[in-house]
Length: 151
Image (tube, rainbow, N blue to C red; front, side):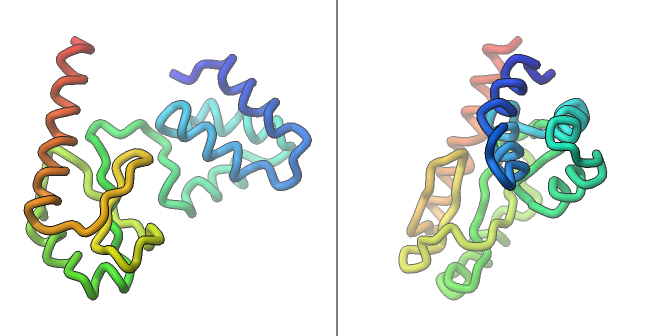
């Protein structure tokens, strides 16, 4: 559930900003892990937009999610430089992985040291099959530990 006070703080921080929708959506996604229907309604009202306009932006960009992820997310760069450096073989080796969500992302800006991935805000470069397997294990283990603490 969204914290209404946090959502209000985010909206207030961007109140005088022209073109505030994307920065607001990024802040909401960062704060809550998703952009809920409640947040869509509140943002639309605050910016004098329709819910459809806000939803259209959310559904266009891959970084925004309408529901929280149930698995840790590894964003794997699938841009041309990373393809040239073997990302397709890395991805194929983890097809059907169920402990983490592997999402494609197109260019992390580390083209000379690919293939690359991102977990949260942390970038991982020069991935080999072994290094990528270690990232998957670490992310999956982190989920297990977090789940044990939540129970």
